Image (cartoon, rainbow, N blue to C red; front, side, top):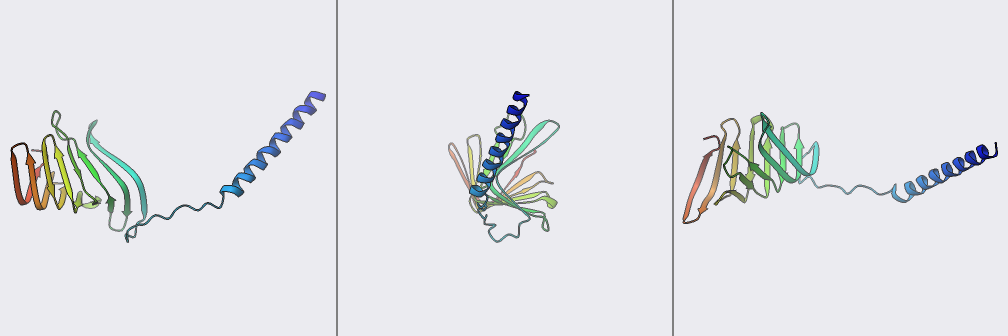
Length: 168
C-alpha cells in the first residue's frame, strides 16, 4: 500500500511539473507573433515560401518548378512567383532545359506560364537569354521575346523572338 501511495504521489508531482513547464513555456513564447510576409501588391489568397512542384505523366517526370515565394490568387487562377526556376525534362537521353528569371506567373486556367524580366535558359552547352519567356502548355511551345541571344560554342545568334517546340 505504501508503494501505491508513493507511485501516486510521484505521478501527481510529475503532473504538476508538466503543467508548470507548459504554463511557463506558453508565457515565455506565447506572445511571439509571426513575421508578416509582403505580397508585393497582389491580393493573394495563399502565400507560400520555398516551394517545389513536380509534374509528370505515366510515371515519368516532365518538369519541376522551384521558387522562393509563390502567391496564389484564386479569382484570377494565377500564381505569382519570385525567383522561379523551371526544369523541363523532355525526351529520354536529352539534356534537361533549365529556365529561370526574377519574376514569373503561372495561369492555371490557360495552361500558360510566363517568366520575366531576365530570363536565362540552359540546355546542354546552349545558353539562351531573353527579357521574357512564355510557356504555352496546350501547344507545347516556349516563346522567348525581347533581345533574345543564343550562345553555344562557336555560335552566337540574336533575334527579337524565338520559338521552341518542346515536343518536336
